[in-house]
Amino acid sequence: MLSQLKNLRIETDGRYATEQELAFLKAYLGSVRQRMSTYEKVRDAEEVIMDQVEENLTSIDPQIFQKGTEDCSEICRRDRKNTLRHSAAAMLFNDVDRLREGLLIWQGTIVRAIQSEEASSLTWQEMPKVMEDHLSSEESELMEPSLQLTRTLLM
Image (tube, rainbow, N blue to C red):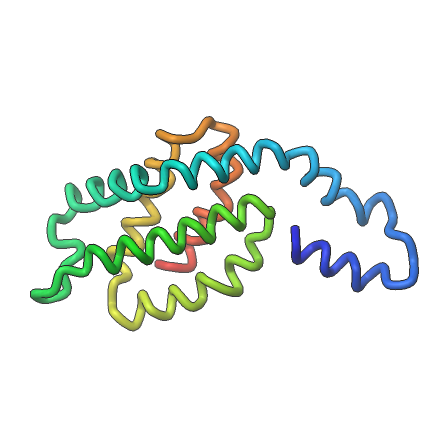
């Protein structure tokens, strides 16, 4: 939404916005309470979500966080948290463009550089499943675009 507001400001410079141009704002305002509730649930359950995802991943591959002899589980957890926080913020503001342009391009570069595509792919495959345990179906629908974009860009 922030990107859309910025574009609206530029496109309507010196004139009033049309009803059509304001439609996205009306839709967003209608969903803001649900978005805030979803954001708060994700925020409050972050540690439990991280634990569940990690448990799921290690049950799939017990060595998933190993790079040779090094245990990278704490680094991966930190990165998962950071990415989930940005995904939740993108959902809150209905602005996946900022997610795509900022964090995910940077994070994707790191994932490829350290050759952890498999772990990343599995993480963002499991994340929506775990999120469903903590969110209503409506809240899961709100998070889905951010989580799907994350999965796509980090594979």
